[in-house]
Image (cartoon, rainbow, N blue to C red; front, side, top):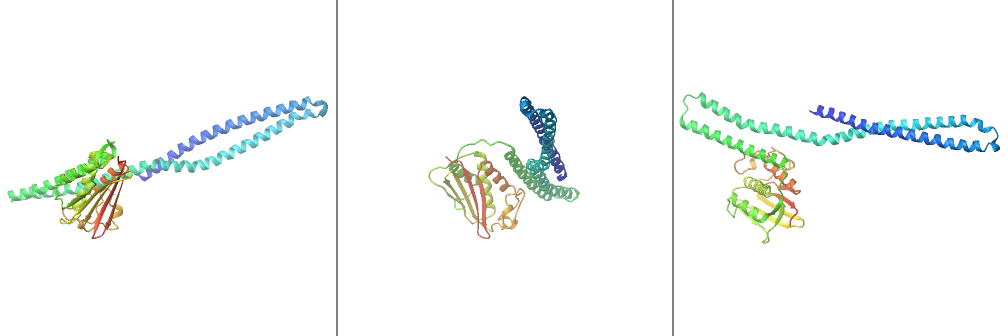
Length: 335
């Protein structure tokens, strides 16, 4: 695939250079034609003045035709060589500039193609694992002539668990695709009310998630569904990667030009090696830091980052190993 983009780059470079040289040659021909015509006309005017002054110069003007022709020929030659060398320089510099411009033009397409290829490969790998487990369990069950009803129930329950995992993965993939290609409907969203609604859905004790918010409601210009999804992802991660008895601190505040959301949880934290990659799709760090089911696919934070970017905001994660992890989100355009 790299060779394909290199070939496309060279072809695009060739087209850029061809257009540049056609313009340059047309410009050169025009300059040459105008300049030689103007020079011939001026020399003709000068010759007429000399001929009209023949009483002063005597017969010397008879050689002026030859002088004018030679002068015009020398001027045309110099102009031609100047334009020729100028076009050679334009060809060399234009070739370099055209290649760089072609690379710059194709880079977003190449990066998007690489991202799609990598995403497809990763998704295929993630789908292959649960499907292989289901196939293996079913094949074993079918070959077992002494299979009891309890054994079959266990197989079915295991397959149902894998189906749920596949359903969760497909839902997350669809959400990522939706945010990649769908234009969001922006409206005024009461961030305070939306946060409280998200906490009700999670149905956790107030002692587990401590909300700190100003009495005055905070509103932002955003997509309600996406922000709700963002809150659920961040809070779900905080719950999953913290001890069951620990407290999670959720703080929302109005800021100049926007609003901030801070979610802090205790736990093992994120290592310095994992932290730079935490927003990459399908990236999963140390599974031992989870307090419960570690069946995630590494898509949640990637989706969260995508949602924040679509709202022209920022999201950062800081972590102190074996102490706390904090997710800081800034959403602009508050009112």
